[in-house]
Image 1 (cartoon, rainbow, N blue to C red):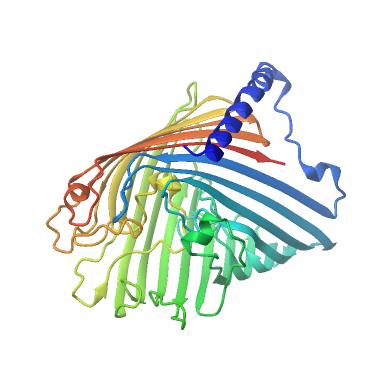
Image 2: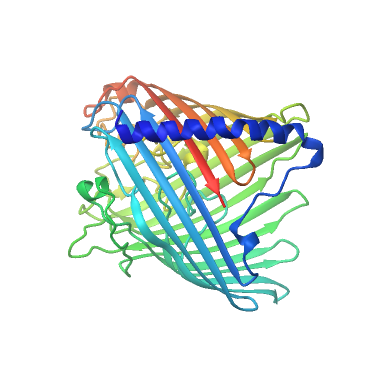
Length: 465
């Protein structure tokens, strides 16, 4: 363990110990109510808003699963966000947010732009809001943006990953008083820089880029179906071109879909059904031939929250994302998750993240508990198979057997996560562990590391002001 990482772990331990007494005191005063979190905003005039967030996380993986690499992995990631909003006129705001995402690694732990993006303008936008447009409220933003839509499975502002997706364009969102929502956006996805391993190791500062060779747009509609059920329809479009200095998968994809769901509530059944299809043209590899693209994705979950101590919620879930059934048939059938999040479905990402929303067939079960007002836990179990045994296991792994003779079973994963809101709204500690017992495909595929069991652990502290 490197000295820098060791110091950071000591810092996390000091935070946990120093605030323990404060947390116990707060719990003992439950009848007085939960105090409001302190914010920088509280000391500022109404026309100015400033918020700050910092998160430090230590991650350890005891066995690398990605093709061509081996050994333990250890990383310390730090993310600081500074967000400022200035009121220009009633309903008109100017905003900017700076992201500083850095990493310290031990040994030859690989680095990507998912971990490092030092001192970057994450958002810079003008926003207009009005509460009486066509009988509803409208919010429109233009500039560099971050966007969450629907379930966040196809477009999201990243929570767990150390860097955050950013888009330059326009986003218009209208909501009626009855709960109907209509939203349209058109953007140029921002490509994080730098990309070379040496510059990432040095946390080098370099401006991110966007251009018209990569465009992403969407149309989204949602409404209440009953008093407790809600439905969504969406259509996303992704258009990508090669550049002289950058070869791409040259995707022209359209992703229509829907979601129907009921939110969890005490002593009640909840559910989610989400389906998406993908059509268009794409390459399976950068620089390869363009193929007809036809793929599909489905998510189903059914949960129940018990009216009992610790508010247990038990959930059964299932995900299917198609794979490329035949690499020689002139079609690409592998579903792509676009700019979606995966942590809440498939476990921690970071230097772990062995599963993504492509070529996957996975049932699972999870149990959520809340022992106290400030502590919540999650226990999860999933079994994973390839949707098609001749396609790649997750784009990031690079492991594939085009003959299909290595089988389809990837393995079984157990996950546990604990969150402690030490000072609710201001300080949260979180820790998690994932254990993957690998299956026949990972052990038999020709270019697999055959890692056996995987163990991943993380510990983080997040401060919000």
